[in-house]
Image 1 (cartoon, one colour):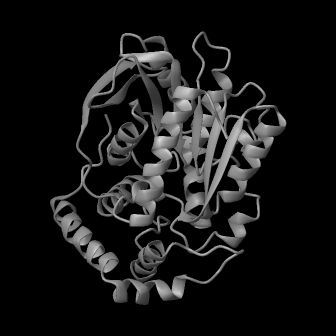
Image 2 (image 1 turned 180 degrees about the vertical axis):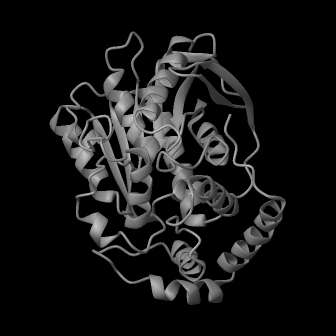
Length: 357
């Protein structure tokens, strides 16, 4: 299983930086002062004050910029940032690691089992984000624990192959194989095969949309797809890429860096398995989509929800107007933590009841 191996210096910086962040967010005057320059209204939306302060800190440090870094360096850089803003993982969840035979090599899953959840439990195959290049099961560990606790479901976090070492279609192949393996072995894993969903953030939302469509004819198809601020259009042609592409952690420059590694020249970026927005989604399972008011991917998430709805697929779309791309991994930020807690409970309800909207 891939784990970003941070240096001793980086590991020493994390708790210090986390304490500094907590001090900023808990000191009203300091937080308000930092947030002031980032609280302008944009298209009728205003950033949550705590996120505005965090973004102002990023303005000063340029920590989110990836251009100029190798993929290996970018992975370490992002892993350190996430460890600072995501805080320590919650208790009450048991974990274990499994391996299975994937399309090209053995693949790994980390299983999250909340204390006291009766079996067979609803289950979620989780596909992490990171632009198909960065992040891992380890960077998303805290969120997967919170998701398992809030949804009262087992979570199976997939360690798929990353670009540029493994460009498209490796991630698609692994994501589909991971869902199918969990669905096929659901009963043995203590999961209800009728209630196995697929979920992911950003690039993982892209892959979850692809799995939802490709696995619809399987003996055990996905019961639900949950797409968090999904990347659905690799052409990056919708207006939010221009209006929100420069100041909110995920920038147009970073998006181009990711896609250049995942879908290099020669790959048609309008292919349905690269850009779900260009697919016929009529066979997809019922889908929940969460987009953020300050995210360059916002419009493509909304457009994909509209395309699903037009194809007759049940869809629940929610915009979080004051949030930014990546908020799921920001448990140290109160507004982001509260949104994540509410959403996790809603996902559990949807898995158990079959109701959307």
